[in-house]
Length: 200
Image (tube, rainbow, N blue to C red; front, top):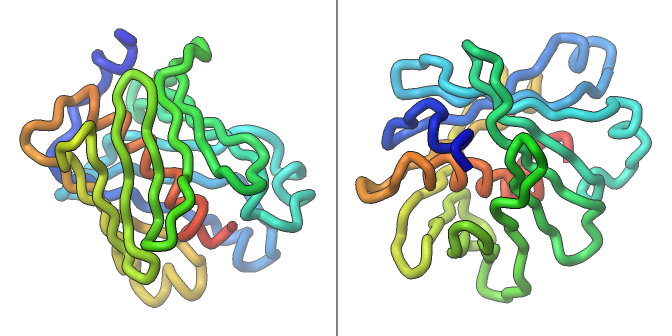
């Protein structure tokens, strides 16, 4: 737990941008996902790296159900801060958030809803993620408090149509602790990977 508490303090507004390489565009190579967390000035705060074998990724023809694992790193110290791990997804899509020593911290699970996209957060914090079907906006609640707004961002014609790069913003409410900001950031990756990541 101390690992999460001692990590970089996140501001109230951060942008998470997917980075792509030219090899994906020119030769069609499918490489592991890489996201960068930025503040409003464009300063790099965190790196989110997909681990595992690229060949395993290519073996899954249906990327929507493939397992994945990400690690959150401090870009300066290279310290491993958190792991986000998803099993094979058949119906009840979920992601587990773990400490660097694989201690469970939080689980995020999609729930059946005909009114929109709903996810349940259970573990060190409890809450939910709620979004409408056709809008790129989600509200993240801790208990009954609205603690975070997740909004999809336009990444520009060049990055979207040539690279297929994803981009979204998290706006934290003032009462959100630094500890919870990190967990909310990790939680946001289930709807991101399930509905919006172009590799899926």
